Length: 429
Image 1 (cartoon, rainbow, N blue to C red):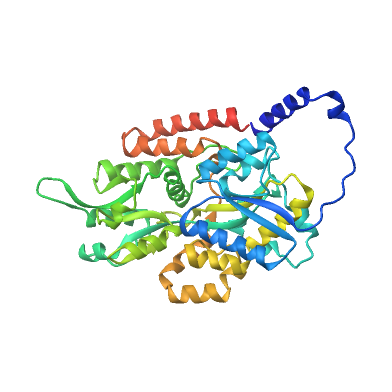
Image 2: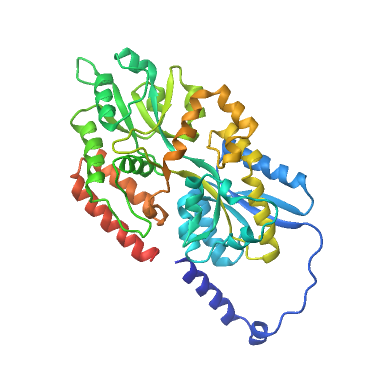
């Protein structure tokens, strides 16, 4: 537990200090003059990293009260470990780019600063209601706001329109999961030796994304992976329906395969693949065939989990906290979010950003990318168990057991439930 670890480390320091050092009253200090300097820990590489540095530079040039130093800390998982180490040492950054499910992990132990008072006292005209509700929702924990939406995404289905047309299918994505299975059958080809030439779909097995697409399918069947109170629903019928469908497509229909890369799609081994809205630019630019971005199929409803990153405050200095809050607002404002949308493919985080002139023009010139906006109304936060330290890996192993080991779905779900409960009790409760 973060709080216990930090407290133990602090207690050790106090024991080692002379008594006079511990209990003597601090000398009065004059408030420092000049601009407030804050540190921003960011993640993501490539364009997503470059655009963060660009906005930081713009912020520093726009005023003379605050100076922000952006420090790259690696991938989300590396950043997570560095935050834990920083909390233990007491040397924390002021603002962090956080994978959205981990807000709960840090907020529950007091590692994040609540933004409620800052928003309440804000007289600048800042309107929290401008953020799109489905993207702001997972910034809350225990009824308090701890993070603002930054680079947000939803899962999509990407279709090879040329393959579909060649198989006599319409150049559109399947609307339902039943149609998804049917289309996969029709587009699948085997040679005379019984080896697959092309398959309907590659089920994404990525280390940090496999669970995300599975969640989307479960939501569309009307089910849950886990609820907001960490109740686990994996053994319920909607989840088992998804598990049986995907498993049957791999082992019975033989129209699907586990896939670790979008290269299977780009190399025309599969006609469909799951991907983030943030994958759109890469797939559209690299493919030599028609790529159709589309909603995930529905069964009883359209509903998908949101993903991507948020900005959270970890500063332990009151003066820097106000500066951090101003920086967080700037990073997520309409102008800068529009820049993020255009350069990366992530979604607009607010109504104003969605209607910002540059954003409007961008989607007018790239109409195929509007699907990301249209799916915004059908979003909900990710399953609560994703915020567990090993939650993502436990769910990845679950999907591996289904689609590679061909294990019985109910048995797999029972094992996964037990693993998640153990992780919750040991590291979160």
